[in-house]
Amino acid sequence: LKPSIFDIREKHMMKLPILFLLSTASCGNAFMLSSTPTRPAFTLSMTSSKEESKDAKLLERREMFQTVAAATASAGALTSLFPQIALAEEGASSTKQSVVVAGATGQTGRRILERLAATPNLVVTGGVRNVEKATKALSESSTVVRGAMVQSVGSVDTSGVTLKHLDVVEDSVDAITSTLSGSDSLIIATGFVPGNPLKMQSAAHAVDNVGTIRLIDAAKAAGVKKVVMVSSILTNGRNWGQADSPGFVITNAFGKVLDEKLVAENYLRGSGLDWTIVRPGGLKAKPPEGPLKISAEDTLNSGEISRDLVADVCVAALTDKQASNKVLEIIEDEGKPPKVFNGLNM
Image 1 (tube, helix red, strand yellow):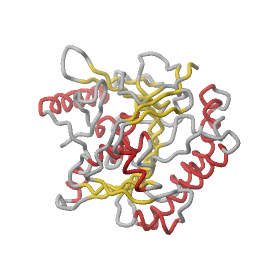
Image 2 (cartoon, rainbow, N blue to C red; image 1 turned 45 degrees about the vertical axis):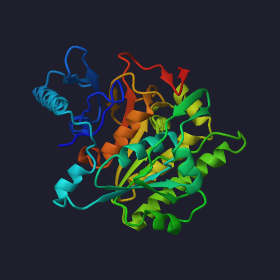
Image 3 (spheres, helix red, strand yellow; image 1 turned 180 degrees about the vertical axis):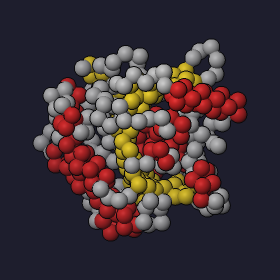
Image 4 (cartoon, helix red, strand yellow; image 1 turned 90 degrees about the vertical axis):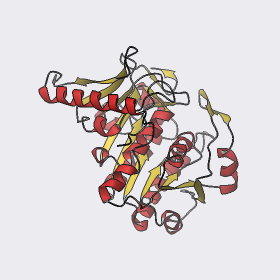
């Protein structure tokens, strides 16, 4: 097995297989990966409303996870789970899988593209609005201002990537279907960028709702088998008593973006496609500073996470059957209840 990348503390630290993490993630539980400074191994800790921490099955999972992590470290395996496991399951190791990243020039999209481009036996396509501008943007490092945060992004080696025109606002379903034709999977990393206050709601509606639905329709028409969608925690906040929470109020003030995302999420769920919805907390450009925490649907209302970890989870979710038709809410664990969201103290 070549495990998926989990960059817990620094970019090139030991990696962990998401396969075993997600196999233990169930409704009502939140699992965290934590590292110890004294030995190269990772442990799995759990918080549960049902207080099942002493359950024999959990202990067996923990022992198995530690064994796998130690084996991973000793082998120095730092490559991605995708697509070797999928190919092994199909018994066709010579067949190349193909994936399209929609929103490939965005801060999360470019990180996803970078990881996929470094994966062997994989045909990678970056969906971008302007191929010429995207080629230049991806080849350069830059610093951008998003709301209250200043974020830096590194350059991406696109030598193993094909960039194709894809505009979820302007393109028809037929045009997007043509772009996705022949692809096995799709990662949706699109999202509107707040700008003119008078146009934010229409922009969020066009990109995060209508545009995303257009992508899903095109994926079905093109024969895509798997869709991974990047969304946000609190997207469904109204339905679990979070409509007045600071995180929901502040985030949704930008064009009612959470309400728009929820429409697209629900559309994907009912599409008949194999899907995974990744809901990160507030997004940070810097490397991970804490262990990854994967929580059940509609459980997190604050917390932040490195875009690097979001990209890792998205790539791993492409082939991990434990992530099939599931919502994964993810943040970095701080060892205490999170109180920060999108750079703001809650």
